[in-house]
Image (cartoon, rainbow, N blue to C red; front, side, top):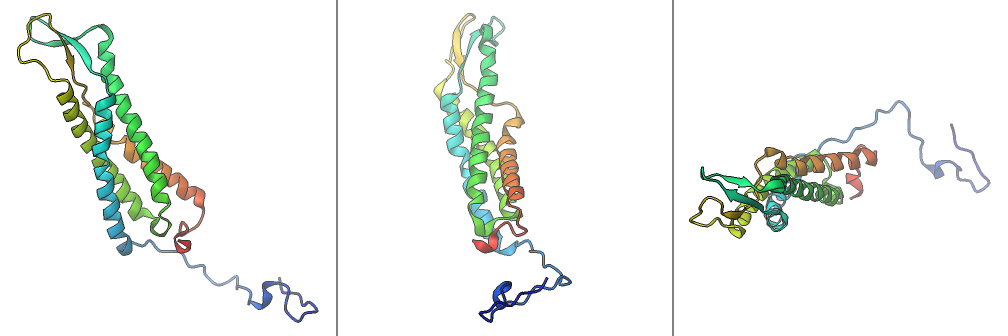
Length: 197
């Protein structure tokens, strides 16, 4: 398809620019690793520290479990109080899920650093944030609901919430990877728009 001359002397198609040749190979953008290592390390560190406020918020929201001391010296939850163990886990999973979505959206706004290095740093930082959040959260909750030193059979006590499953560690990283991947696939550009940043 060629250009058409118009009375002004300039070609109407392309305004004088040469047409790209169809046989010319299209250059694929390369993955930038070295330039993204320092920003990736910063993202990893910042996200790992996100576990501290997540653990604090969880310790304030997770319900304690009312339990009775048996004659054998075991703490047994009262009636439906055992559901609070699930409640505490569900609260932590929802906190991690919402943090993961927000983190992925915020990282996508760093247009000049988009790519697999930043995604990997965000996922690894989120795993560490989940681990740190469970440790800090359970420690703070244990401080809020201390067990009495002496307990007798029939005593009613509030047991601090805890997280016993490793599933709590993967919610935030999965949310980060899923949302970042959806944004990358929706973008449609080979370089994810890095050159425009």
